[in-house]
Every structure is written in structure tokens, then in C-alpha cells.
Image 1 (cartoon, helix red, strand yellow):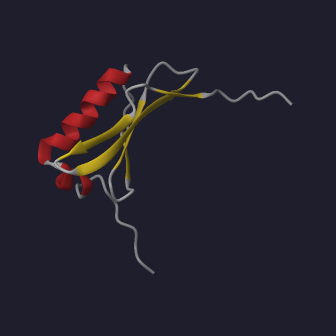
Image 2 (spheres, one colour):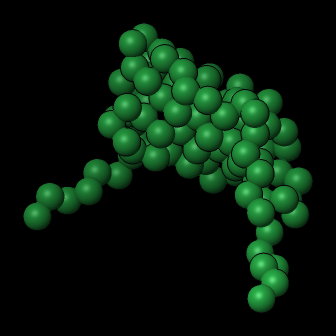
Length: 89
């Protein structure tokens, strides 16, 4: 059987960074058939933050990630309006 699904391309700009002692994993990727990049940042607590809007370059995505984390500090990023806490059973 032939696999017709496009492959996922991961940017070389994807990497772990430490900001004020907090670790973040910045993932920048796209489908091989797409020209725009998706940005996802996973914080040290394992919470994924995915940007709604795509980026025209992986460098733009990288810059946006760092700017967002550093804008209010890592704790503000982790606990900001973009996080929806899961209900505990």
C-alpha cells in the first residue's frame, strides 16, 4: 500500500530553551506540501501552547515564540490567557 499522506517537516529552529530557569521546547513544523509553519511551545509542566495563525517562515515562528515567552516572563506565559486548565476528577 502506498502512503499518500504528506510527511511532517520539522524546522532546525525547533529546540529547547531556558528562560529565567524555566525550560521550554519550541517546536516549529509544517506538512511537506505546505509553505507556512506551525508554532507549538511546550512548557516545563508539559502544557502545549499552539499558535492559531501560521508563519511564513520558521525564523518568524522562532522569533514570535521567544518574544511571547519573554514579554511577560515565563510564569506569565505558562499561566496566561492561552492556557485552559483541565478539570480534576
